[in-house]
Length: 457
Image 1: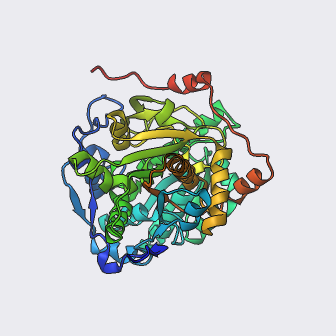
Image 2: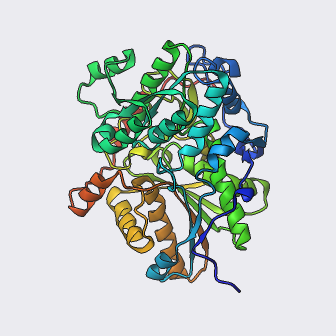
């Protein structure tokens, strides 16, 4: 039998030409989004002031199993896709494990992460509708970077509200966004009513994704020809990101493999939902039963310590309410270095799957994450993003369990991007100045106190 190659690239002809909509195979749909004014379920047209129309339709569509990827999007995808499926031979050897470890690497593009998969789609639909500009938020900066690149492709203006702590920690990520023509503002800011109100309440706040979302949505609804776009959490984003899992499954089939365990880092759910999509389909339809594990930071534990409740998706209460695992829209996480995993809530799709027992979740501390990141970098020659390193930590732990049990399980995890803009985090780890913050129950209660009154059952 031929040895499995270190890297497998599909050909362009083997790329998926459709996205997969996971909701079409769910036994029960996620609960509907609610209008914050009436507390009634939203209709598609209610989203038109915020999202462009085709994206609003994708957001509400729980029935269409496969969605054709437009030629204009496929043309841009082919610049950097398919992405490689990689066998972590050196990591396996170092761990002395019988497990086979694979990872899907999404960092081989200018934006440095998987975020470009949805950024291109959202910018394409905005351009097709005749819009002239977009607004968004970004945490660690991967989404802002990807959307800046996508807007440059399609000739759209872009305003990015970047969480203040990340804006200060990652100045070069900001510079990349500006290189592609984006305007970048630290959030909360004095440029919006929401930002001014948040700063009046706490002038020294480090910001949060919830704050930045509020500012971006406010700017979008106040400017003609402008709409808001989001890089995670939303149903439409998980749809676009399904290309990750679809490519992964095709590549593993070529190798004669199928994962026993699928692992992804979890912040809002974009890469996790995309990676697991076709494997969760198999689980939902009874074709296979892989373990699916979401890995989140212990400092922002929405799945493992949050509440399954209706909540605003933003801090300023300008967005619809979604039922999801949440720490409360007022939760301000510690200024840890996994900036992309600092959102207070989780994708409604993934929240529902977790609530119904189809998925596991675990939370890990920063220093344990960077232990894994450094070990992986030395062995596999890729410096991983802090977010991705949560998945690496879990994959290593599962491989060690295999060593102890003697089981030769097949593990697949998502390497969402590179860590070259996160050197302040690596420096803090190497200098032993990195701290682990795990919120107390009292701290979490402060966030839960900001949950809105729940609708009657």
